[in-house]
Image (cartoon, rainbow, N blue to C red; front, side, top):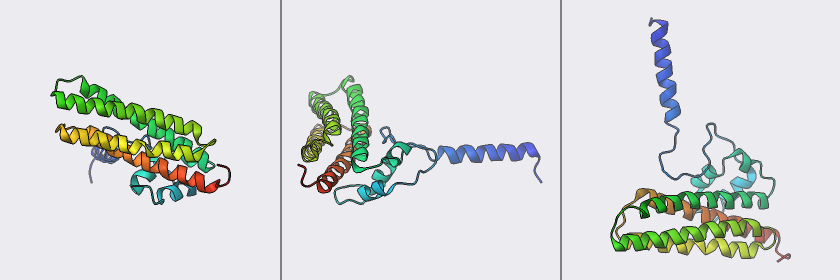
Length: 197
């Protein structure tokens, strides 16, 4: 039988490896990092199973925070999704800003500036939608939907300029997921209140 010190050392190593294996590997990740999985609410389940949601797994992970799980209705959930989308857009904007400062080709700089503007627009749109969910979900739905083409244009510019930046690609992918979640929640709000708008 191994001495107690060796058993303690093995236990510490095992626990360290186990806890590190659950850390995120991407630079830009939804603000849903919780150490223990939180069961999703029925609102979150319904949203993440919606037709417009591009990535169900991402949706469930992004919306696994206790604050989101505690959302009592679709409007509260929508407001939280818009805040998460704006926070993710800001994190990605910060990465673009960091990369713009590095020397590069004129084409790369043009593409990065295009993306920088797209993300500034995304932040403003998510914030605007967050405040407009109650008054006019139809307009909020449109405002979320128009973020998508801005991000797609950003991606095309990066590809054309041959910008190789995995963190930017991940940020663009996550932004598309948040847009799809935002579109789904605003569509749901429209259906819940068809005569009010």
